[in-house]
Length: 324
Image (cartoon, rainbow, N blue to C red; front, side, top):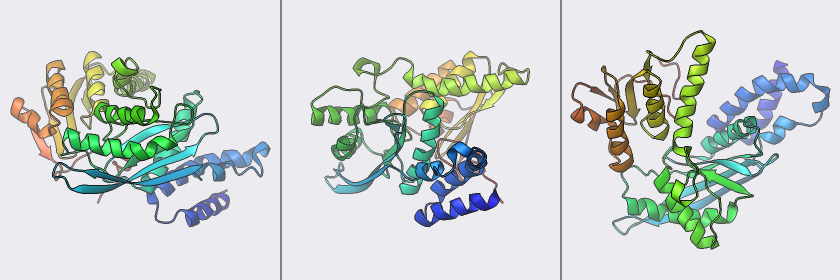
């Protein structure tokens, strides 16, 4: 069996050199799935996994936009349309400096399995750009999103490929992207998820992922005859998922001690309550400030910069690892 797995990984690796994130995901799946495939005669000669690791389509494009100093900036945009065997491509858009082909292929590959597990007719895809929205004005983000969608729009559609948000792509960015799509296509269609409720979005969509994390944890604890009530909780991040995970933890009687962003993390020994969370939501969603500002509002809390030792399993891969 080890020989079969190594042969498969060698074949895939030869076609995907210098893509460590993608190969890591493929390796983890192959080691689990190949023994099952080999044990079933029905799959003999079908090379199912070999077909699944090869994207149906990879789109890469230039995104030129004008900053507030009237200087033209250039980023690279991507859309990985990985697999549409059971439905149109579905997966988020990520705007972050770490975005490259390897990262997006890794995310798109895993998205195929995640979407299939919902039992809904959705394929898998992923996209984004190495653009960093942090520190950019609203107008700069708008110009970038409009330029990005001016290329992307020809590759997506409600029955073809439905992007969503991810790191760096929240309600603001989805709004700019959808507005440009609507302008280019002259139609109001459900081509993007994560829209505002007043313009085609779904109720409880913002809360869904964060709440879901806590519900999942509660079910795990129930299996051990325990409950989240009364537990001290360490949450990383301070974006959409972290905010609503914090809210649900508070509602269920847990005490949330930490939140973080790329600059570091805060520790509030008295716990983050609803009033403090309301401040954090305003800080991150409206002011677009750093989590370190929390300690100015609540001086009993402490801020630890990124230079300190820190555990931060955000939405990025390999956030937790063995370190020497």
